[in-house]
Length: 378
Ligand SMILES: [Zn+2]
Image 1 (tube, helix red, strand yellow):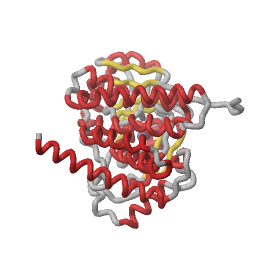
Image 2: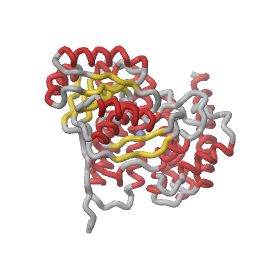
Image 3: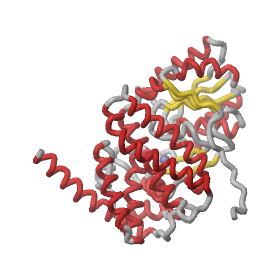
């Protein structure tokens, strides 16, 4: 018998998705707010943000535009919070990648205002969820925060998302794949039907990604692209919403959180680290349970990640000159008492994680060599 109640924050109140989602969103936004703060970050999305802002002003809204300086971090959050508060803004529109969307949702949550998310890439499901990750100014993961609700409106306009660099979609695919690898193992002892059904959705999403990812990356005008981009940005969020905290993150995200504590030559995207984290999680499973299926799953996943040009080892993550002590620090962080790594059904400590990190690197290098040999012969 289940004795506890479960509170779910399943989905945005409204989701508009399609080729002209923005046009339809424009008819809805005036019923949500009159003086929104439109939040963004990178230079390359400035033009689209300016267009959205002036289009909203044209239909009578009074838009205030602001930009983040860093990832989703407290310095920025406090600054934008004050601007929104003292300008009497009545909603936050977050327009950008995962960290912008998380920041917008967090500020809206703290001000008790509605949030509107407009993803400009399919790199995460942050446009959907009632969760946000907080980082340091250097991009080191600090904590995640559960929000009171999902966004009031999610606008998933294909034309906006298609403009994003290819790398962001590949990264989103790795992040969405993690749903299956993490949820299926962390929920292994759950007899909650909603959790089990969410895990099955994660399996279907994984299969869809296995089938369609390569085509989606090659051809942004294909149906495969729509399936994959929506899978990463929408379905992945829905799975988290239905499954709740029993169906979320485990080893892969814990490895991501640990690795963000290190200094990178070039900064990796969220899903790039999570993808490598899945490989490490599977290695832990192999080491601790001698499960040969985990080895098979890891080999299969390495092939897919390589096909998508995603990093599969410490070297390709730009951490080749990282000292062993630093990797150990990342492992200590990933094994903190409140880390999601402890959602795995076996006990993991920093020594096991360190071994898995190094072992996972070894297999990857062997497979990479074999692959290069085959390609050379071909
Ligand atoms: Zn993630």
